[in-house]
Amino acid sequence: MNWNTIIGVAATITMFVPAIAIVYNKLYQHRSLAALLISLLSTGIYNLFSENILPASPKFLDVFAVINNYLDIPLMLTALLFFCPIKQKQRAVHIVTAIYVAYEIVIACIFGLNPKAIVYIMGPGLTLILIYSFYLFIRHIRITVEFGKNAGRTLMLVAILFSYGCYALIYYFYYIQLTPAVGDVFLLYFISTFISSVLMTIGLQLIKNRMKQLQEVRNTRRELAMFFGNG
Image 1 (cartoon, rainbow, N blue to C red):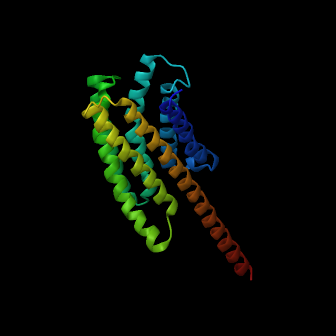
Image 2: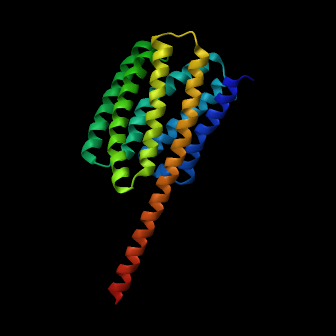
Image 3: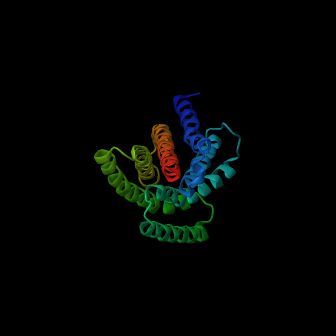
């Protein structure tokens, strides 16, 4: 077992940690985080097959890779709604997501479940995620610095920005430049996956703690209202 395989297995296992955090803390009740959960599980399962942890034929692996890439951007755009509570701006994201899905359907009609389709769907998709997540990060980092709030959401956005920034580099090297150093490309993917999964897990835990604090405040206010109301 070489170092790439060891790091790949470690990164794959780490990817399931934020998924477990979402399930354990029941954060999947938020539709956006349910989309994030599906994305994490889909990519994690694909990595289990690609690293031969689970057996799979080359044909099955190719089809799974294409399906995973078709799902990735719509799921992540939905997940990013968690960081944008304003309904009017959410509507714009829904429209962009619908347009992107329509574009994917066109690509699917042309190329089908062929690995070549990944070249055409991931380029625009990665650009969308990077632009929107960067916009949300700037907004949330300002709130975190000025008011000491939203640290969990900010850390989650750091994880998304870091991972998709690395994915954009991988896309360029692997699909555009056609680099022969495939091992180095996969090493970058595994390292970015490992780091982003750790950051995402910490961010999710901070969000759960914040939600618990807010619930305690609401309960205290309710009890005070009942007490003084009876008085």
